[in-house]
Length: 353
Image (cartoon, rainbow, N blue to C red; front, side, top):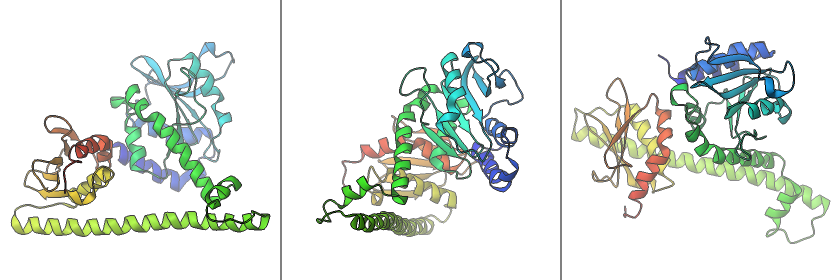
């Protein structure tokens, strides 16, 4: 049985390879949207669960339909509108979703062109669809954080409160990232004035503004490159630390086999909590039955346990009174428990390394 991530990767490759054949809305529905819904666990062959060409009489526009409505526990909860893959998704494409959202019990709406899936809800005004998405998922660019959010839309795990708990933060994070991306490519005059205010003391003539705009654009990119280089350097240092730690374990207990999966799991956990405690305080100590991730290399300060030596894999969490084991189908799913790992790490935050 394939996992959500496996199904999304297969879909991603399909879109990358065959997007030229998805010129129509119907092609997008068949080739991408229905498999996408199926990957989330919905029965696309049950018209009582995944309703095609959904119509609501109260909308007031005769003959207007939404491409799909998903019914969960007897109520319409998700509306979906599809467009051809070449379509640039814009606010004007929300009209039908906007009207249907107000006359159904739908809590979420998805606008997609088969490549980008834009998720909307009613954060700004109850029962009125927002005009900006809280989540944009690009199926050709699979990111662990986005996949983690998609898991909340799986039929078996669907929970309105869990989705809304992070929706507002996601919405503004996404919007700010778009603004920053635009500023990197085309710095506005106001932005140039802002960053140059404490650096350039002369009069901002048209020629000077043109010069400074180029400088700001280049500086922006240099900052990003410097950050990337720094993180790569730290990652390489972390990798060397892991290799040394694994070598020491193997020499001490030759019966223990530390797998690449355990090493990668350790590095993911370490990266997640780095903003809470210094990475140098996070250690891996492998054992026969599980791989322990400890703070300060102290057994009394467990951060997580990787139970990967079995057919069903678990991560053990310690934010409660005792270890709680959660199934992980893939290493990316560790990110689903990022907040719980940070809570555990924060407990040891006052201790010295």
